[in-house]
Length: 228
Ligand code: C5P
Image (cartoon, rainbow, N blue to C red; front, side, top):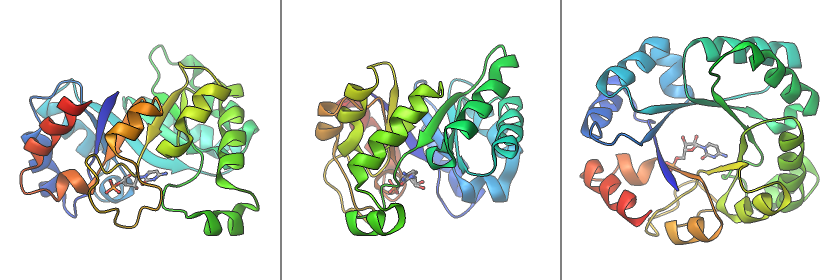
């Protein structure tokens, strides 16, 4: 299992301070989401790699649009040299296939994951929007992403084991909503700790607030890495 730290701090300077504190960890994923990317753009990604070129960058922009527009965006993302990005599975199988087809021309392309169900949804809200239970829909979205040739999915730890069973063990699961040692859940609904993530065969856990709100983030990361 690998660790991905979410760079969700309010300013670029604070994010870079955190990145520098984590400099010595070569196998770490760093997640750049809407806030940082909208504000700090491509140059922020370069600055991360300057701190440690071995950091792996996950660009969490959750693309959702018509197939051609998604493929255009995916192509631009691939040019930026990030290691992984994501799209919404609910954009449909055709959109996912169009994205993967567009990336075929790249010798080294980023990993592409599909978002199944956001971890902030509770069961009632999810059903209200999608008209189905989370498990049922997550399974359907995961199968469609697998068939479309994606590398894996973003899901909650609660669905990871089932998704591995329905697809194959090499199909990646990345799970946000992780509270490594049972910390408070904030706005996340379906949270899991490291023990559960391991049992559910999660490949990459995403941790935000429990790391960047800790008084010593580097120590927290060290503790998490040891527990993995
Ligand atoms: O602070 P916390 O650990 O809850 O952060 C989780 C991170 O993962 C946030 O950046 C959030 O946007 C992201 N995320 C999520 N649920 C998803 C996909 C991404 O929480 N399904």
